[in-house]
Structures are given as C-alpha cells and as structure tokens.
Length: 320
Image 1 (cartoon, rainbow, N blue to C red):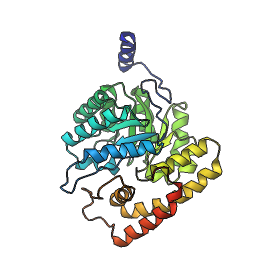
Image 2: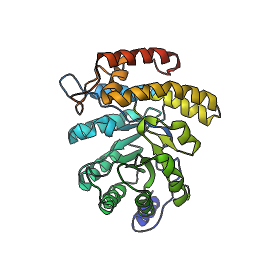
Image 3: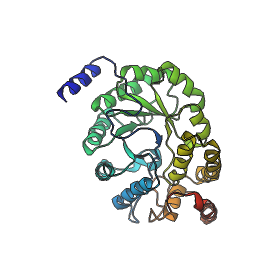
Image 4: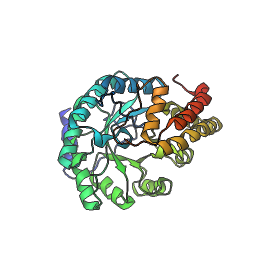
C-alpha cells in the first residue's frame, strides 16, 4: 500500500499514469449507462434523502451500470454545500451494497470548494468524481488550472464534463498533465465529430461519455463511446440498448432506442420537471417539484402525453 501511494505521488510530481478503462482504483467498471440523477425535494423544498436513495435502488433494479449526482440535471447549483455533503454520504453508504458505480459531482465556483467536495467524495466511497468547469469561466488556462487542483485532490478517476467552448486541444493538454483525468463527458460541440480526434490524440486512452439524453446513442456506440449519461427517469431502457448492442444484438438495440426517442423529444421540451414526473409515475418520486424551473412549461396536457407514452413502453421497462 505504501509503495502504491509513493508511485501515485511521483505521478503527481510530473510522471505519467495510464488508467485502464475499468480503472484499477475503482472497484466497479466505469463503462455503460451512467444516468445523471434527479434531485428529489419535499413539498417544503427540503432535499429528500430517502427518495434520493430510492432512486439509486431503482437504478440498481434496472440493471443500470452507474449513478451520477449532482450535475446539471440534478439542479446542483440550487443545492447548499450541506445538502450536497449529506446526499453524497447517504449515496456512498448505500452504493457499496449495490451494482452501479457511484460518481459524485464536485464542481463549485472555486477550485478550493471543488477540492473539498472531491476529498469528501473519496471519504464516502465514490468510485469516481465528475466536475463541470467553474461557472461562467471561459479562459482555457483558468479552466485547466481548476482541473489540475481537482484532479490532484484524490486518486479517484476524474471525469471532466466538457461544455461550452472547451476545445479538444484543451482536453488533450489536460489529459497529458492530469494523471487522474482519463474520462470525459463531452457536450462541447458535437461529440460525434470530436470522438475520433480525442481517441487519436490520446492513443485511445481517453474514455468518452456523452450526454444530451443520448440522442445519438447508437451512432456513439458504433464509434467506440465508453458510455452515456442521460437522465435517470428511463435509464433502464438505455441500459437495454447498451447491453443489447454490446452483445451483438444490434436490431434489438435499435428497436429499443426507437422507443426511447419519443421520450427524448418530450423531455427536451418540458425539462427537469418532466424527468421528475416520469419518476413519479414509476413510483420513485413523490412529486415533480423543481428549484431551478419555477416556471416549468410542464402542464396537464404535457403530463397526459407523457403518461400515454409511458403506458406504451411499459412492456419493455426492466423496472415497473
């Protein structure tokens, strides 16, 4: 153990480290469908830890590969530091007994705050960490410096959530200088057109996940994506697509993805409230309350269509 720690510290001092796709530091594979969890709130606007844990169990029952919280679809910016710490502790304790790998979001307005979240994620047993760039920051050197500090805070695998104008060149530079950074959730530009370049410039070591509700999931898998991070509401369907495709059952994967596509269209219109409404329909959430979408466009007509769609796809859901 002491030898391993010395080796890692040597890496941080300027060496290089190649992390395998199923990273040895993580006890669980970091590959597949890793949904961004929605954050449940009580009717009095408190973080509902019991429902958050039920969401993790729901993901586990659906045979989904991972669980990510809190990120954009989790309304992370509306959460207090105390809420994030409490949620992370509860998830860390529960995830140890379940299949999905746990990735905890550590982004914050400052690198110092993000480091606190990263250290805490390690303490509670996360399998990896993920971070958006500092809010509102566009300077690539500042962004790289932020990730340098976050990546050096622990030995956990680091996912960079690339958004805005975070270029391939900047990601590759960070890959070369941050030993723990070998995973990216790429939502900057069109990931389909950046995937080959990232793979080529990192000798295939950069593991690429995508977002945007997995709208081009079939194409992404065909190009060698390591995973996707959609929302949690129908993550079991995405897991069926992933498992079928990688078992060689491409037709089944495409048929299932066709059913997902109509839901993707709806949630793109109605946002986070619709994701929570689906979880409510599935018996996971108690309500579809949001903090960041006080004027949510989800109305009764929208709910009616979502109910009809969920009824239509019910035979293909892994968790009912």
